[in-house]
Image (cartoon, rainbow over all chains, first blue to last red; front, side, top):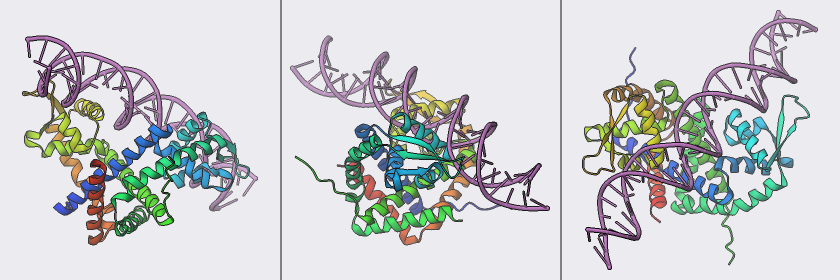
Length: 153
Length: 153
DNA sequence: CCGTTTTTGTTGAACGCTCAACTACCTTCG
DNA sequence: CGAAGGTAGTTGAGCGTTCAACAAAAACGG
């Protein structure tokens, strides 16, 4: 059986390309700023943020992977680098002998605290300053609908 | 002089994280599908699309870089790989001896034509099917505002 | 229980991207 | 004209990600 492709009409085409360009440009800008000002990519910054919010600043690798939306492999490599930088340490999990805990060191916390204001300012300048309050609300609903739809069909 | 950080309020925090998660998940899903079905990452697919739309299926490297929102270096590496795959060829630019034209080969066009239906279907399923028509419109406006703001201050 | 399956996390290779350095050519202007 | 500066594109090194393969431990199921 042949399924006809449901092609994009001009409006959809325009929306898709605009979204592509905008999200790519935004992420690249923030990534570059973070790399320049804090010496780490945005993905690593996010790992530090999640650890800083966790009880005792530590999380199971798998929980950290879920929280940051990253694969286990990716997280493993990333934590290895963060560990080499002295920002994160690994510990054995006491309840599951397969498990590893990643924990944020004081150095890591200090680095994060130093990087946060600049990064937050970047997010505000490049994202929120461009949108009306109504658009911010719309963007939240759209994003939540997308995530919902992507993780639940 | 000390500038106070304009921190994100809880609503903004939620919006930012939702946007991050959604756009990352969407791009990773489409990237994986394209890699699986067509053997190329989304960035390469986009290059082929832009070339296919250009007059004579050829574009200057710099125009192609602008059209795909990529750095010159990135495009150079990418075209090198696409050339090795036989999907793109390079030609000297007749009017500027520094210039190079990238042109889509018949093989490249055929590969693109084979990949397009599946990819478009993915975009529809993962993006448009999750949103109401009003939200599609909102997303377009938001994206255009973002791009505008990012490229013009 | 004990074999099977699942879960957890790591590893190495291949790949794509970034960044800085570089060549070659074009443009501008004294 | 000719020097200075700008533009086009490439290159190689280093980094981060993916993918598949793997080891170890837990959970399951007869």
